[in-house]
Image (cartoon, rainbow, N blue to C red; front, top):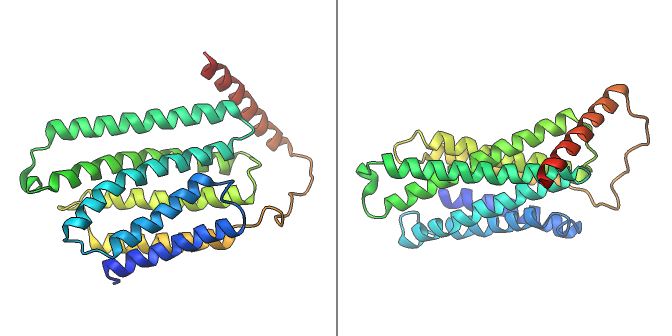
Length: 256
């Protein structure tokens, strides 16, 4: 099993590779939020990987950086929604506001319930309660975004959306990354100290693989082959009609 520092630095190297690939292929302008998220992930992992987990600097770095992780995650998911539904402004706007509402509601309920019911106990020692609340807040945000990503993947699997190769690759890779983070937080929440080294190392290994896969499958926009011209099947026409109808309904709803 890799040490904490080795796992963090290995994950950082994969994030750096993904950012470098995005910049090399001139895709950073198309995916600015995803690029910022990956760059932050690299800084986050390097910063924590070079520090002793028992040090005060590590503790406060973790407390300060986790909210930034959540904010950039929200912006990245927002960007994926915009790119996926760029031809359907009603669905895009409704999806964005649904994500904001789901995240805010989940975060508010989780922190309120925690504040009312948490008795502290062993976790109330020193500054442990800060970590507890940060973990609860992060879990709420990540699970909300995971729900949005699952919905996005359902749309991508069901409807013939013309998203482009890179948008599809980024959607799948980022969904896998965030869903693995949600699974880790769920498993960690069952542990006494809200953490398990074996689970964390396995998830970090998965993210490493995910990020390198993301890097390999990205294509330069100018070299990406255009989709062949073909007549949509009867089922595809029906699904596209469903999307158009849903888009019109949601567009009218968000204008009210």
